[in-house]
Length: 286
Image 1: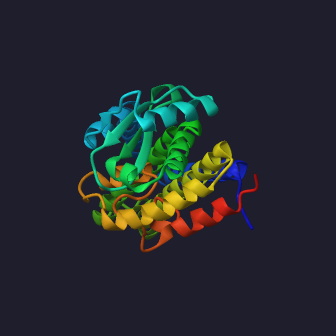
Image 2: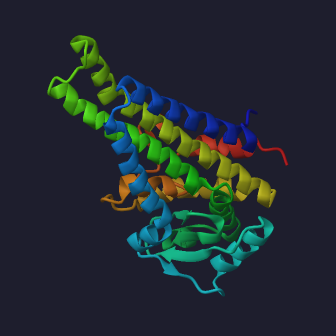
């Protein structure tokens, strides 16, 4: 059976980030290197930089996470995994919510945190829980917070410039060739942000595949994580996280989309389908 492998996932991530960068450069060239592009880049990088630097505190506070004691079962599992994966021990938290889920955050392995929900602990057995924790520790090891931030920055700049182009098109600022300039503005305003979003989401799905594989190889067993993913999909349907202002900004962080286990189309989803994740885990050769 076909499996991309960790190296292939890293390569795919690099290619996707390169495509996002190329799209940004094309937008800049099309607009003639205007000050608006520079301003957009500065603004988005500043906002994402603040988010990246303080992501752990922001997200943990947002979900009312409480730090678990060293004697807790989850903390002991994370300690065991951090030793096995040669990582600093992250802080471990529990989110008081029935939605079965987990996420990792932090700007670096030295400033990382792993959080599990109350619903996750109620739903999974020890082997499944260890698979989920290994997945989240893999995100820390693979520095996925940084990768997601970079992708978000580039897509954010494109979206910001697209918004500016939309207003320019509305008020008729089409450049020297009015008709051709207007068409270019419309392409930038409508099509490029959609393409940027699709690429950004593809980066997110690729990182989920990579974390799944890394977790399975660390444990030399993918069955626990496979079983956990199937339970989580069902559990999220029964206890979805309440949709509010947190949704768009944080859903990519969780091991399973906490608002809806399935998307109407995978291309606009932060996570691969559970079926595909399970199939890829089954195909790993130990």
